[in-house]
Every structure is written in C-alpha cells, then in structure tokens.
Image (tube, rainbow, N blue to C red):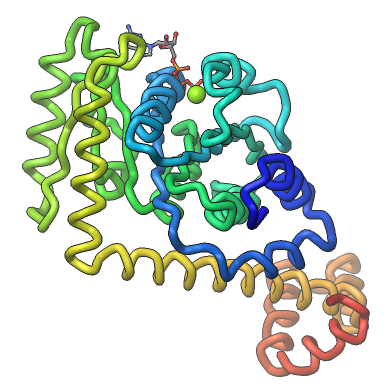
Length: 320
Ligand SMILES: Nc1nc2c(ncn2[C@@H]2O[C@H](COP(=O)(O)OP(=O)(O)OP(=O)(O)O)[C@@H](O)[C@H]2O)c(=O)[nH]1
Ligand SMILES: [Mg+2]
C-alpha cells in the first residue's frame, strides 16, 4: 500500500470492508503515511450526475498532474457488488491509468450513515499516495450529511426542476455545502433553480467563505474547469485561514470517539448479557412484575455505578 500498489490497496479495502480481524494491524502500520491527500466529498440526490462529474474531476486532476482515488459509496448494498456497475463502465476510460483508482463500496446497514469502512478506505488511499481522494455518496439517509465529516471540501449537486422544491432540500444540506453544483444546466428551469438557490444562500449567515454555485453540463464536460478552479480556491481558502487543520483535527477526534463509543457499547453489552443482574431483571419483566423500561432503567443505573467492573469483566471474557 505504501508503495502505491493498486492491488494491495484494493485488497486492504476489501479486508476492511469485511471487518477482517487483522485488517486493523495493516491500517495501523500505514497510518503514519496519511495526512497529505485532499478529500473531496460529492453528494446529491440519485441520478443528478455525481458520477459523471467525478469522471470529469478525474480528468481535471490528471491534467493537473495529480493522482486521484475515487470511492463510490452505495448505501443500498452491504458490500461492493455489481450495484454501481454503471459507474464502473462510465469510468472505464481510466482503467489503464495508474494515477487513477476507482472503487465501489457498500454502506447498507451502517447506523449513522457513512460506513466506518469508507473512512478507513480514505486513510488507505491517502497512505497509498493519491493526491486527491473523492468520495461519492448518494443523497439518501444520513450518509449525505455524514460526508461533510469525512471531507475537506463538500460538493452538493442539484439539478433544475428543483426550483420550487429547493426549499425542501434536506435540512442541514445548506450547512454542509462548501460548493454547490447546478448540473444538467442544459435542462429547463436551470435559471429559476439558480436564482432560488442563490436567494437561499443569501438568507444564511454570512461567513468568510461565500458558497459558490457552479453551473455544469457534466455529460458534455462543460463547466468542469470552473468546478476544478472553485475546488482549488476553496482549498487555498481553507489552508490560508487555518480551517483545514481544524477540520482535519475535528474529523480525527470524531473518528476516535466513534470507535470508542462502539467499543464501549460492545464491551458493556457483552458483559451485561452474561450478568446475573440482567437475567434477574429479565425474569421479573417476563413475570410481569415490572415493565421493560423500569427493568432497563435498573440495569443502566448498575452500569453507571460500576463501569470499571463491567469493562474488566468484558476483557476477562476475551473481548480484545
Ligand atoms: N441532460 C444532462 N444529463 C446529464 C448531465 N450530467 C449527467 N447526465 C446524465 O444523468 C444520468 C445520471 O448520471 P450519473 O452520473 O450516473 O448520476 P449519479 O448522481 O452518479 O447517479 P447515482 O449514483 O445513481 O445517484 C446519466 O444518464 C448522465 O448521462 C447533464 O449535465 N445534462
Ligand atoms: Mg453515481
């Protein structure tokens, strides 16, 4: 992976995706080499043209002499499968370019949106030396908002015809967008959607960064230069203001917290499930002597009173 071997990169991502027991050791041994990739998140409703835009961004990056890794996250699939075959076909033009890595990843069944494995895969591509890492997520569920917590620049793609319905853009979407792309600008209603989006952005609080709207016609590769320039400008803004370092620190902090939370939950639950207190509470609920909430409450109070014991027990139970 450190040598940038794409087969090694693909294999490690697969092991991380399957939660292979020793995959974390590999990640541990390459993490020191991360921190240089610039991560772009690109999200939007199904079919707005995200993959077509990514294809255009791949060309822009290559023209700028930068290597680029792409993760296309499919929230409907638990694993990489044929689900994003369309994306693969569209991006086949890059198949023989060693500076381009493209990979689909599943995210189904991930509470809290963006798969843990996706965050790890970003680290893998980073360590492998890809200068740019793009994560495409379909705007379904939480993953759309989650992408902002994994990316340096977040691009939200909209299309015409959302003119009236733009008010119904998912809550939180305006807050996460660093750059709006109005794709399919060739279609009817583009002007109106643009105006509606502009007025929405003006209503928001004025910040140091004015969220730009870039009009594109991705399938004709129109507007991709402007989009690339806007990304470069946003990156320069983040770097010069110090916001990039802050964002990245906050991101790693959240990642640690997330993993600790998950570990605690697993450890404490495993210990609880084998404890006599739990069995006793369940028995009394089954006997209708108390209601489930009351029972859960008692168990939680117990957890509060003796967290060390529970953690020790869970370690004793062989849970590394
Ligand atoms: N008219 C028009 N069609 C476009 C444009 N950009 C992309 N398309 C078409 O829109 C369709 C969907 O494009 P994709 O790039 O697959 O969209 P996506 O957002 O990645 O789709 P999902 O990943 O399935 O959510 C394709 O048929 C594209 O050719 C555009 O600017 N104008
Ligand atoms: Mg797509």
